[in-house]
Length: 157
Image (tube, rainbow, N blue to C red; front, side, top):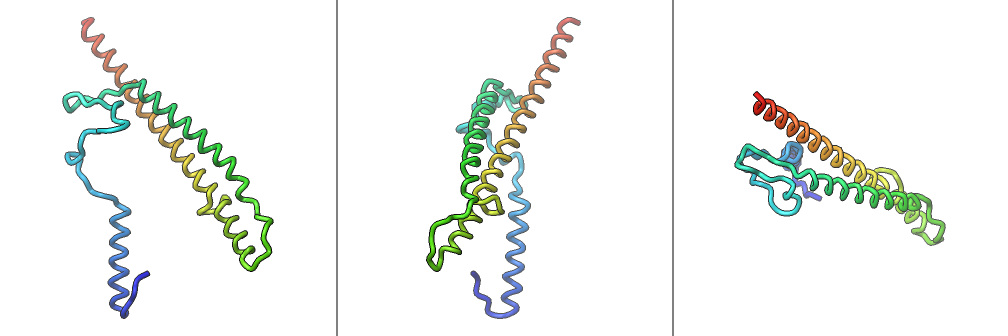
């Protein structure tokens, strides 16, 4: 919570907030030359060869997809369990029980901010990532096959 001294101070704070939101919305503006080669976990599937060549290890892509599928099943199981959280609580007769019951129903339910909504969002993100990996692997496989055909045709000629 911010303290506002006068109308001019409120305007300054609003402008500063709008500028922060704009910067967050557009994200960092980095250039490709400032991005280093991949390192650490998950980078083994990408092998930079010289600078202009990028080779994919299809076995590691398949392993990553299997790991995503496993996580998807795990989160789907949590979502099935979380469906029980949307039911109202029956216990309690105290002065706060009504508010606790309402709050728990919202937090455990499928409404915005609820556990079920968050889990469904995770499932959507995992499915999107899986689809992106499928697309990248298929595109690279197609490019590799076309390059192999081109090279085979050039050798035959």
